Figure 1 (cartoon, helix red, strand yellow):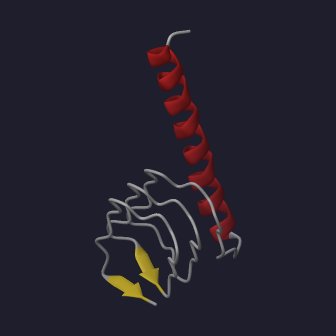
Figure 2: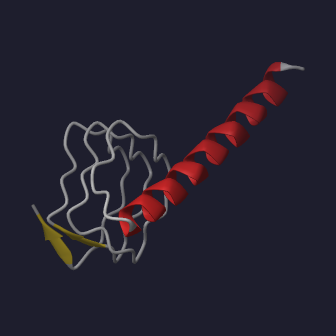
Figure 3: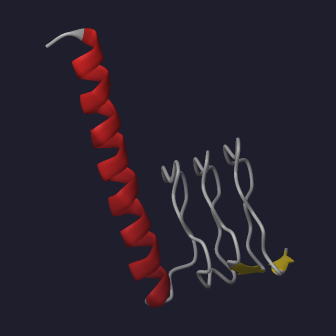
Length: 93
């Protein structure tokens, strides 16, 4: 496997991990979990989701999309948030 093929394989694997992490966050959130520490959510799409009171302490949110999401009381601290998209009516916390 050449370097280009290896990089493509790594990108697919990263996307699969992030996709599973997003599913985990949404499922756990629905069950009452609010703390998601040090989770990789690179490029995650949380647009128009209800994430009131969520905490993404030390999470990787690079390229994540929170457009229209309800982030009332959300805590995003010491997180990697390069190029994060947040267009929300409800940001408090």
